[in-house]
Image (cartoon, rainbow, N blue to C red; front, side, top):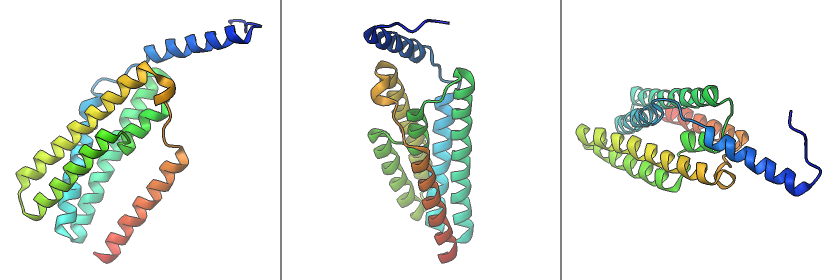
Length: 182
């Protein structure tokens, strides 16, 4: 076991060095980006169909799409933790909340296109928009990952578990409202 230096500057330098070694040793699991892109694409396609259908079955399909995405997100985050032995909160926020500005814009734009296309029964365009959402979000997470590895202090902060829990409750209430009104 390493001894703690008496000099505070040495202790800080040793901590910075340890953080740097840990950050450079982190690895994403195999298939991380394709799995994430697929989960997002399924969610966007299902949401577009469900919103356009405006039926109980449509809402059920939209909810199934959310369930697929959450299962994929949980899987890739679990695999990351298992491979590395640590959890990176910023990564969870990027994956679950599509928190990066670029990724959020791509997601929202593609979702809007998919919804409009679904109302117009242009299913090929729904599929293209869903794939674009998945690809764009995966690229956003990839960009964040590279930025995190360069400067982990700035990029490590993610949404707190409380914020994620509140967002999950709000999403569930919204879905319940859709079912009651549908």
